[in-house]
Length: 506
Image (tube, rainbow, N blue to C red; front, top):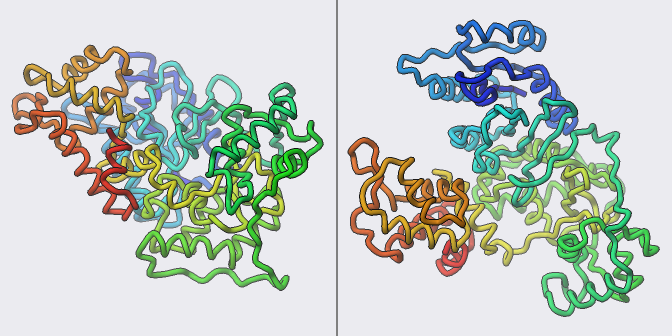
């Protein structure tokens, strides 16, 4: 792995206390996270970017020497040290990616949204990109778009016990923090009071099966989809209290329903050879078929079955996919997360993505599956989900973050009423003041979307922002946003119509 620390972002600027970053805890925490997940073992380089010529930065010398951190001096001729540090860090990251192809894991320690293009470039180079921040009060906020584009996001607790937040899920920017513990000693506590009475749970399941077609496959209960719905109401159900091992057992024993179980391909018991290098993958469908084959006919499937209920973690699966399919990546497929690729590619097979109570993700064979942990398979119809469409299209370059449909409508309405050109900060304030119910950060990200797609433009005078000439109605401005979304969808052949895009965006 290679670790790059944006020091100014960690201590909150040179105007405050620059000596507050616990570099040792940060580096040690990152190494623990990466090694315990199995995606990397050795640290190739650790670099920290700052103006090390300042006398108050000398406090870091001993700690940096102890942990093998290389100080990178940042020079700036216009006092914009932060911008110079960001540029230097980006250049060094790409240099390491090019000159040291054996380094597969890149850790960016910063919350600066300016690193989003860098993360995307690392994905293009088939590298695994992790973003890390700390819970220090002086550290800068972490840009939500930066969190969303990274393969993983972790927060290091520099006050005591190591903590982390994974972004391998929808809405990851707001997930609770969980302890980072080596997998060998993880315990999965069961709720003592989170289980409803058996008749209540049974009635809820039967009602869902009558009303929600997505929890059924050919008239049988899709336990993974059912479990996902039930967890939204009862996140910590202990099925052992009802005399069942898991949700599937409860459905069959207590509800009298049949659980859908994909038929696993029969094996002659012999070990297969390591999968050959898969070349010339050009489309998402070809990539999905290749991924599926590595499980149903290759060593990945054998490894998953060998590990029984623990399965194989997503970091190890990601490394295997990169090695076996070098010509195409999960990012090329359009899915913003590897676990989504697997939810789709493994649909209809005997393999499921599961999320354990420690938030870790793995693939488990149906013979060892606890359906209450399983994420539902993704079908073609799921690709039109407004939430997934916004996430997928937002990852395309230039990266944007789409707000909810009502927010976009409100912001467009206010933007078209701006009386005169404003600087960017003033423009944000004007719109935010007009929409007090919308968080200021959401306003800022939505204006960033409008700027990138061409609704807003620079009037050429001191970086003042104006609406693009000719866009005088809300429908005309929306047309620009939708046309850009159509382009993004076409780049990855995402199966949506313009009607689907309007539903997702507006």
